[in-house]
Image 1 (cartoon, helix red, strand yellow):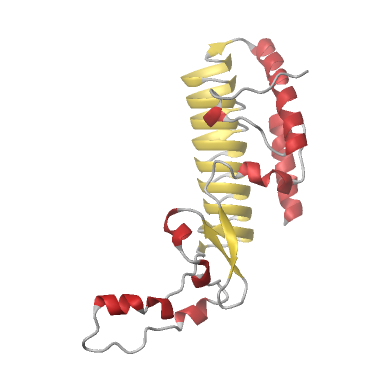
Image 2 (spheres, one colour; image 1 turned 90 degrees about the horizontal axis):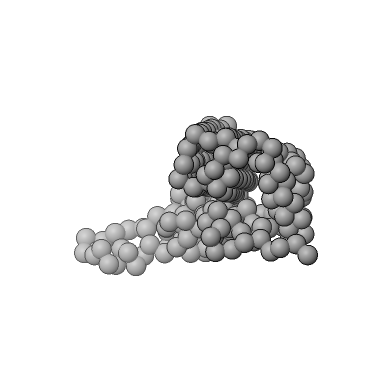
Length: 258
């Protein structure tokens, strides 16, 4: 499964940056930085592991009370025992630790090559994710649907071949995009719609070959894009991460090359 994810990641990075990057695991920490994560916890009954999301009440569940799918029948067989006629709510609550266990895994449909993921539906080759539905070749995603080849995505629908995109739908081949609809081949944009080949655009729509909300034409756009990728790719190759993103773009700038 790791080979399949490496292949998918290399394909996306080649589309976005002009160069395939690998291995996928080298970039996992960076991919997860703006997406709720989780961790694999050994089952308290000793068989297998369970993926516990670091989201909502899941993060408050004691690890010693987590049971895997394999151990779900054991957890289901636990009971509080006899309840007396004079039993109080407080006394019942004090006995929860004797029989209450959490099985934090949920899936529906047919899921293939899915690992460390919660609430999955008809997914293929998905890793380290929460609530992916009918999607494939994705990792470190949160609440996505009908999508393909997304890495580091949060609340995304009908999108593909993108990385670090958030609150978006119908987005293709984009990087560091937040609040987007019907956008293609764009980088570092926020609250945008119907963009095609744009960079650093905010609160705008219906533009092509634009930089900073200004249409500059194809030639100038490709020239500036090449300069951007010349900064991004070496940093990713060397450190496995990028030091700036759409959420902190105003506070950080790429360091000048010597």
